[in-house]
Image (cartoon, rainbow over all chains, first blue to last red; front, side, top):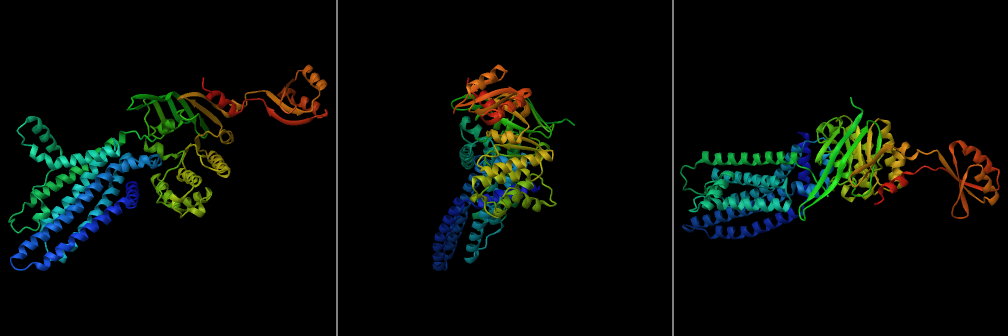
Length: 266
Length: 308
């Protein structure tokens, strides 16, 4: 266990020293700052019947901000996952690390853990900003919003795990590209599942069952809705649990692949 | 328990490139046994397959055929690596660590005993001349300092087998001497040392056995004494030897050959060496070097690496 923690800490230390991430964080905060201005203006003009519309606009902006942050974290997750192994190979640090009495799976789990902590911190920063704005404008979402937040964390974990898995047997560029493509396909596949043509329908259905479970609806947005009388918490929690397990299976497969692979350093 | 620490039997390793599709034979039918407590030099020109062999010993690469065992176990096994310390040709590590943090990281991964761990780190830092740089970021280190740090991390958990891939790369003469001293210390405590090097003087100074690879094949694997001390012949350099004395020496069975700078070399055997020296001392000449006429490691290396 201590080896996993050591590798994890080391990976985290390496990630937080990546200047690109600070640049991304700075740009995101800039975008959030710009987005807050119209929210404040909407709040000032909102009176009477206009209040509902103003509130809706505020919600849209806040959900948009968190969604934007979420997308940025997903991109970061793909980048960090895809480069997790290859960066060690490129820097040749992997030679000395793997010459130590360390099981390969521990190395993979440690890398994964370090990346997850860094990503979770980054997403939490976005969440903190969004939550601060929520409370500043006296918007109090239901539990669905927080389930939506939890889903964001799990999706970030899945994407980084998938990129890590592909990165165990391919280059970082290929791993990142494939993960991005598969992530985009997951969003588009729902339409193709019922396609009239078998050539489109069959692979779409196969992929549908292989891809992470889809969440019915946007929980972040529905967290502010007063129309939902009986939200299906059980269903949502089921989907989240399934996705969590999906991510963990990806890590197990990554370990299995990396354990049998040669480490070629040029 | 077997006395062999490393056993390599019939190992073959081929690298395949994708585009253009090509096969590169890195190691071919390699057989090598390294006994416990020996200091073995692994020689060969660039691309001979030395590093590939070392990576197979560490379990980073798998042989296509044949077997490799380290301490009687598969090389990638945790048990084998627990007893092994490794230093790569150029030590690469995380630049954000300080020297102390780097050793702490590698020491913990190597399973160094917790008791006295910090004092062992301090001891190794000072032993390798890095005491003053203990809290400096590794990213600011010179190449020589990195090599010293690489050596320190390899020694930290007191391995029974030390695998050193070109350990003196980037080191100044002082650093090279330090490496030789450390190898001698390790040999004294019974550690088996497997050393890949191009620097033949280092090899002659440190090793008791030499294995040489060329184009992936083992050229020879012999003790150093066997390799360089297989001769009974000696040579004496002299200057100012006149014609008459030269003829007299030849008549008595010594060979005399001309050298540059008006000097000559008189050859003799171990049995006739003292007699020759006595005669030369009584002549009005200057005696230069007295040396064994056997091949040096450099002669052997050049002979075996010559492209046919």
